[in-house]
Every structure is written in structure tokens, then in C-alpha cells.
Image (cartoon, rainbow, N blue to C red; front, side):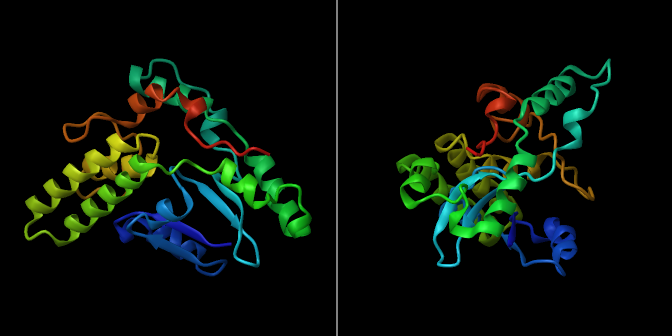
Amino acid sequence: MVTVALDIEPAHAHQWIDAAMLTHPSLIDTTHVTDELFGFVNIPMAVWIDEQGSIVRPAESASIESSPLRDMEIPAGLPERLDRMFREIKKIPDCAADYRAAIEDWVANGADSRFSLDPDEVIARSQPRGLDESRAAACFELGEHLRRTAPTEVERGAAAVMWWREAHRLHPANWTYKRQAWTLVTTPAGASENDLMQGPNDVYVGNWLDDVIAGGGGGAYTVTPQL
């Protein structure tokens, strides 16, 4: 097993990389190249690759433990946006137990596992990659490059925002592009952890809750595994 953190700021992922160090390879993808290679559009997602290097399951939601938020009782009197956010989170499909069992079956049975797909099935279940998705990948990569290399901090920020806005427009279903950008503008300076609510801001058109609702709600938020 190999885990990959999608984050242009490596320091944000170090605590998880360090925790995994003694159990399996754990990497940081600062340019989101795994989005392009495998079709990742959210986290956590995974692909299955066999001993011959062939993908036998395409990118899909890869939770192996249910979120504690799913069973949490929503307190009364919360602000409206926070209340709605919790309700949408509870709608996100929970396939954790079944997905974990599928992985264990594949480990035990390899190519004979009923969860191991042939190439035609892998292609049929893969995320679309048309012109807009390809252009979005280029826009995200260009924004990330300029953020690192522009002469001044102001120029770096402005350059990244311009291209990341276009990436969001071209590929609205790619949550890794959105959440990466939102986190940078909604996390307070000096905060020890990223802002996970990623609410409305003055830099980008979208935000987590409004975009989830616009995309069909929590039930449509992930690429649900077809098991």
C-alpha cells in the first residue's frame, strides 16, 4: 500500500507522513499529478494496481473506516450554515466496511477476486477526461508553478488565483483543486491546522457547502465504489 497526500504545502502533510513512515510508503504530491494520472477528484480515493502494473480498479472513494461525524447527533441551535454542513456530511455514502472487505478479498485472491476488474471495465468506470478536464489540469499546474516562482509574494498569490479559478470553472467536479485553493485563503495566518469548513471568501466564487449543494448534495459528493 502506498498513500499520497495531495498538498502544495508539504509541511501540512508531515504529521501524517511521519505517522505512516514505519508501516508503508507515504508520499506528498505537491503538483496533483496523481489527479492527472489516475483521475483523483476528491480524498480519500484509491486505485488498485496489480503485480504486472495494470490498474484493476479505477479511482473511487476509498474510505475504510466510517466517519464519526456520520453518527454524531447534530446539536440544536447551531448556525444555519454549520447545521446544513453536518446534514450534508451525513448524506455522503458510507461504503467503508464493504470497501475494506473488498480490499481484503483482493489481497487474498488476487486476479481471481470478483472485485478485480478487466481492462474494459476499468475504462468504463473511470472518470471522464475530455478537453475541459485536461485544460483544468494545465491551469492548476500553471497556477501552482507561478505561486512558487513569481518574483514577489503578491504576484505569486495573484497568479495562482487567476489560474486556479479557471481550473475550478473547467472541472467543477474536481474537489482537490477547489479544496487546495480554498484552504489557502480561509485558514487564518499562523493556524496549526487547516480550515476544513472552507466557507465563503472574497477570493473564489465557490465554497465547500454551496458547491456541495449545487452538485446534488452530500449523496453526490464522492465517486461511490461499485462493489
